[in-house]
Length: 258
Image (cartoon, rainbow, N blue to C red; front, side):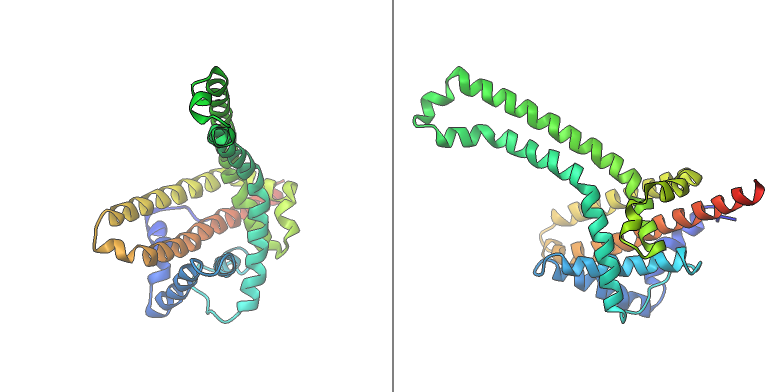
């Protein structure tokens, strides 16, 4: 049977990276990698994703409660993180393209103004006003399309990423029929995990905004961003793994009853 999500289980989930000094030290290593991403692009985050994937594997494959594994299987973390990063990147393409095109559409009047021979007279012309209105409208529409795709992505990405971990396969992220059945079996659990993840993200972002407005603590903001980002990835991936595990268990129960 799947576990019911209670306030106690939520508290356990949120605090497991801090349960002892060893766990806290492992979280600090993940935070250090997050800070290193300000200097070295992509690679630190692939390792963090792989580490979070190892926690997912504990839940999905080993049927264990989440805990902070040792930072010793760096090659394994990099391999699994690369798969998760690649799947996330490919699924994100429909979000990035409309938003990027929309941004360039809204910037188009500025480029046209720069290229015009007589900027002041051109700005006051009907042609420029028409270009500005059309490009701004097109940019807003494209941004809206990108936001719509991001909502769809937020729904479909968790079971896809969890399926990558469960099968230890990059291709598993695109085996739509397989992970869709698991998603359908526990759609309520997945939605709850997304709501909790979204609420946690918004809450921590609000904390960072408050810190940003303070002069003294603002100096620590890069370190706090690295720490909070690493913590969020670990907790959110754990939530998705639990929803996926419960979906698998529900499918097994359904197959037994039928």
